[in-house]
Length: 328
Ligand code: PMP
Image (cartoon, rainbow, N blue to C red):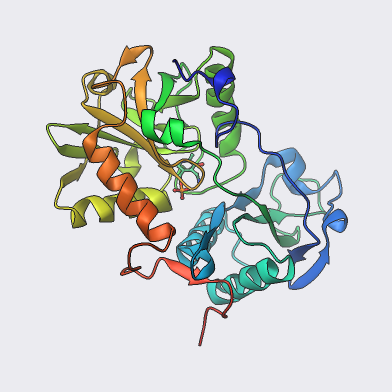
């Protein structure tokens, strides 16, 4: 049965039902969920001047644990620095501590964490450097969303007619809100054409990434993923998959991938905080490999899930328990 968008009842690709929690963290304080509001003339509203993160906290047999929290906050500060948002009052350690405390305060187990750093309300000019920088961290319950079916069988996707943001226009290494206008075009086109997701090419026609996922291609047991220079976000899950693949002994290179390489691949999969490790079984209705999750994808997926489920030892220190502060 084809797994086109309208048939997927749940998944990281569908709109998420958001259940409010009690508190949101704002600039060092806990505030009520409903009080986390900004003025319509805040700089971010007109100009998209926010950087953000998406982090997952998993329910494990050792209690809730956050996946690669430090790497996410490091990327947040990197994203901010690119946009000269350099007066951030909080260190990586402070933001990690705030996040763990927020999850405890809201008494959540498996959840999604959304830190947002935005240029707030004062001047209305584009420059924005005198506007306050406001940091919010919200979290809400989020269990497993991608059903076993999609994880095992893969999803049907298309190549987008929209290119990914070009170098020297919007910087792809910054996870900036404005970039997601491009992501929306890619996602909406895919959705309305009946696909689960769209793969964007960069402005030179090489494979870049999905609207919210990095991509890996496998042929003859060799794994390739586009380098960051192909307008791809430095995904934390991408990095995890690279490390897992190398640990499993696969040859992996970061090199430019022409579009047609996707069609003749043995396996293709997406990685991302939402997508985790999701196999792709068709692209533009061309069957990839056997048209189901391939063996290499399965091995990487299993190794990934074993870590986040607390089944395999966390040798890389990817999980941070919510119960204890980050620093001893
Ligand atoms: N690319 C884009 C455009 C994304 O939005 C995301 C999700 N953050 C990713 C890739 C995957 O990154 P990560 O593994 O850090 O979630």
